[in-house]
Image (cartoon, rainbow, N blue to C red; front, side, top):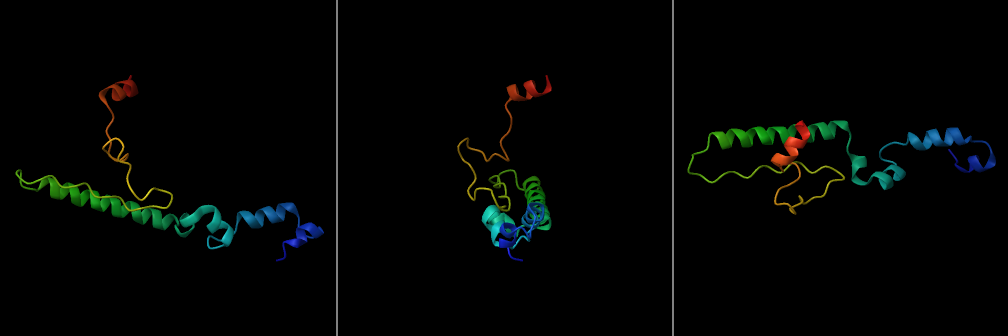
Length: 111
C-alpha cells in the first residue's frame, strides 16, 4: 500500500486511520509508540501475574513453616512488566505494592 495515495486522493482519511489503528504489534510505529510493551500481549501479562502469585504463595508457605528463631524471609520481587521502573521506589521504605495504609487513612476510607 502506498501512503502517498492519501495525498493523491485515492486513499480516504478514514481508511488511512483504520490502517494506522490496526497495525500489527511488530510494526515500527507501534514499537516507537509503545516501547517494550509492544512485545507483551495479554497472555504475557497473565503469565507474569501467575508467577507473582506463585512466588507469594511460596513465600507465605515458607514464612509460616519457618523456625521462630530464624530471620524473616524477604518478600519476593514481582516480575518486571513493560512501563514499570526496574528498581522499586524506596522513598518511603516500602515498595508501593507492599505499603500499608495508616489508621487515619483506613478511618477516612470506611467513614
